[in-house]
Length: 243
Image (cartoon, rainbow, N blue to C red; front, side, top):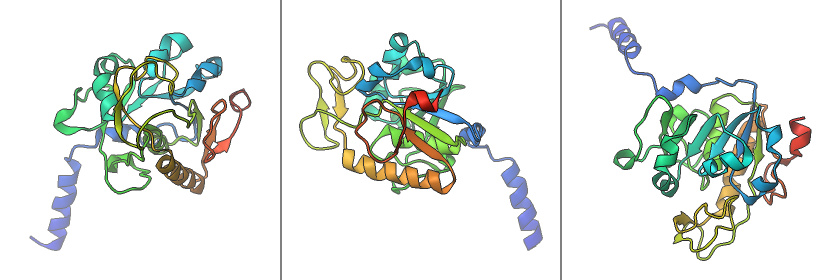
């Protein structure tokens, strides 16, 4: 076959290759604003009346606060194995688009009309195109920021990212938490469950990477956490940003 014929055959083959399921979300919110709802105790001091009409993305065990905050996100993200395994029943019942780390044969949930898998990569970088994978960056928030970029949001407003924890042991070590959870908005969050100790130093490194990628593309990440300790992102007041 000639080179021209080879090229034609390649194009015809490409036409029939299945699209990555994540493609439907590429730039689907171009130029819009996203409220990214993390899970710190400061959520209990956050004015959710400002958030309810916004496009929002919730993380990990945010479902524990749905009734308390009278809030339901449009999108949901979980990449931690412990969270996904511990909460598979609750995640399966969520009536929103769910992005989960692909754990291969260990996936407790199948892909579905609402469930989409993200492919983890080992290269430590910010992935603007999550169809090619994502890097965990030691925190689900970093994964969510990669998704937000891919979906085209021009502004991400973060709440509930307290960035302070009480724990024993070394960063990233798994530990079973006994007693009330002091590190999240609900004392039952990881109580009686295994969780991975946070790694704040590495988290900050990847937050800085997310900020640099966003600002290089003319986008903004605003940290509106009440009393948040993270100093990586531009600080702002929620009531001023969402007024």
